[in-house]
Length: 232
Ligand code: APR
Ligand code: ZN
Image (cartoon, rainbow, N blue to C red; front, side, top):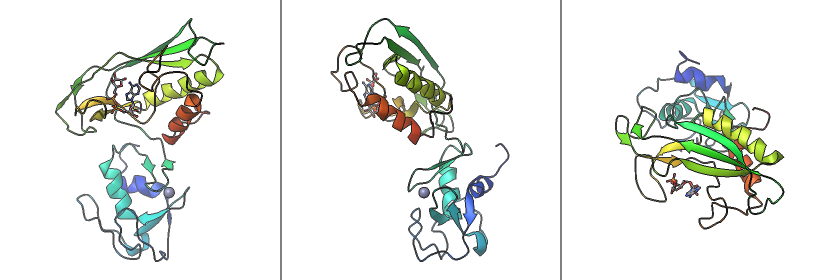
């Protein structure tokens, strides 16, 4: 992917639109038939013929310049996500800082899963300095509550979730750097949009068992990040 300009990346996922409908671009709220409301740096002028594009899979229309501006605001990993329906083009990655993910089976059952053992995942992320992909590049970030322990039932579905979480880890999607909802602290490592169960034998925080819907829920959250069961 290296060497491709943001405009080239975006165009790979677009089809041409000859006559834009009389609708607004939902990124800039200006008419698709007119120019993009985005005049930010790094957005070159484009010819009228390619000023509007259709995202190939979901069909949503935007100004090309608006999509390029959106791409430039992200972590520029070669992927694009439709802001309307969240369809992912390419492989989505996150900005999780370096660390370690380990797992093993422990010979105890989770509440609600009496007939199997338990997978324990251990995440460890040290504090560090924010990179260009983080909210405040060059500024330190803290990392609270590590190692963080998480639990899955050691059955077929739980193992599937584990395989997908390993992919999510490699794509830097499990954690992010930002402001914690729980503590209000900024510039710290926080959970991203994939929920984990961090309580083993109790459910005091709501992040424990029993929770019969949890595995299906986390599989959905993984899918929303572009991780599906067939990639392991
Ligand atoms: N266990 C699992 N998930 C949690 C927990 C928890 N104890 N607390 C919050 N979350 C979920 C929230 O539901 C939300 O979806 O993480 C997401 C981000 O919430 P933040 O509070 O911003 O995340 P963070 O600061 O990383 O987590 C707070 O989680 O694992 C613990 O030690 C950690 O006490 C800290 C807490
Ligand atoms: Zn869309």
